[in-house]
Length: 103
Image 1 (tube, rainbow, N blue to C red):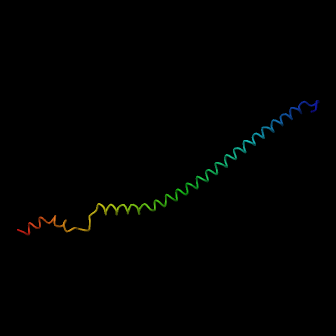
Image 2: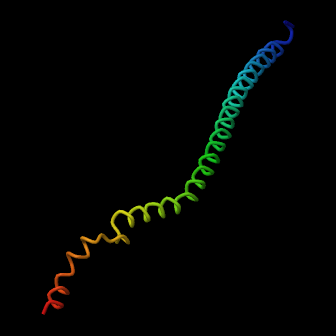
Image 3: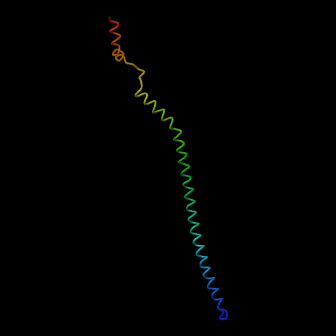
């Protein structure tokens, strides 16, 4: 260094400190960029998953009326009035008519 100009030594030291600070800032920016890229990929993946789940949900909603109708029909078949009548059942409930006819 120049012995006649002590300020030059301070300037070189300042430049070295600034260069070190700039390198550190650059390293931090690269780390943050990588973190942002990772987050962007995660968001893209989650968006695709949401889209797939929404499509699946829509398909299930379309099927719901059919299942409700099947349940209604099964309940009507099981608990509803029967269209088939047995002869024995008819005779059980004809007691009043038989009494009237016999008189």
